[in-house]
Length: 119
Image 1 (tube, helix red, strand yellow):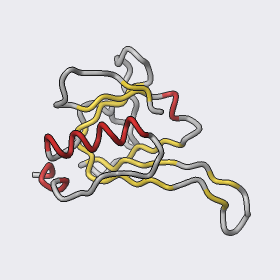
Image 2: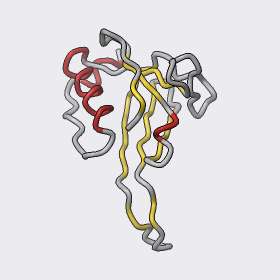
Image 3: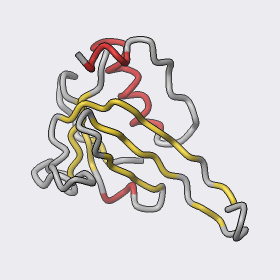
């Protein structure tokens, strides 16, 4: 099963999205996988959608990518930092450091359930 893929993944320590990283590392160490719920409201009732239009409700994360803020090589313009989650069905969810305050999340399998705003 896909959950086994995360057992050998090292910690995420890039200095951004600190609470999110802590929670993901906690889930990896205690569960061996990460299932996430992402909402557009603090009460956790309106689920965000992935690139396929599916609700991000108890979704297994297969891959996480983080890109630091940087200057674009061609234009020289600044590019905001962002991260992308890839789910087990191949769909993705991306979030920049500019828009992160618009979403909340919690990880399935970690009790008590606490809904965090991305910070």
